Length: 267
Image (cartoon, rainbow, N blue to C red; front, side, top):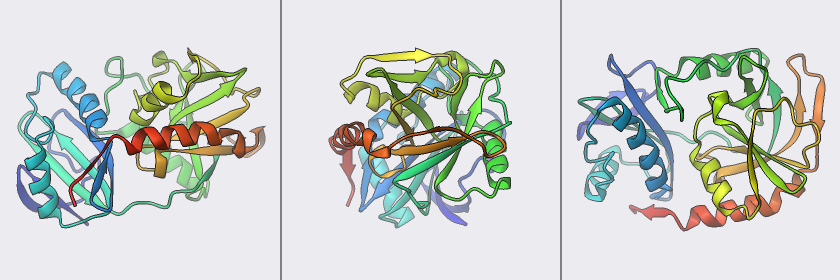
């Protein structure tokens, strides 16, 4: 059970999809390390985009009111973890839970759980997050550990995203990312990578990119926002792609440097 600050009052809760009040809601997961919130502005910009589409007015946390954030973090009483901000038409809920292990290198495993149709494009990060949760359950059923991420495809068989991550790869000196039409999220770490990579970027509706030179798993709660990929296996565990994770180091370094500049300390 994690601690939750709901509308400025400390309460008990689990701050996970399925625990939200009835009705439409949007959420963001944000890393908190040593009292520093990482890339808060980027998360809130994505959150407010969904809220505006639904006609929700932002409360103090969604609006980025720093004294309100400072007060909520003081109530939660933590300096390290994953913050989950959930907003609806009449509530804001900020929860704090422990950070999961963060591997430096991931393996990918294709999943049978097909990415569902988005509510609208660009896809909001909304609750309940049923399809992504189903993908996570499938990944666990395969016995995968912390260093394995599942890949969801859309109904056409094109790469969309991981069960908890965005995906990107380099091929022919071009940064490739799944097209918006695959119903992937507009990932915050992915957006940062596009801005700082120093490479031309192409959105593609693609099957497994077997000729990729490097692949990345992007997740805002990973140190630096991303990890390299070493292998990609199909739904039955057979190899589809492998590469040297070291090839991704320049991209990882550029992204980590970008994110450091966009942190806010509440210590």
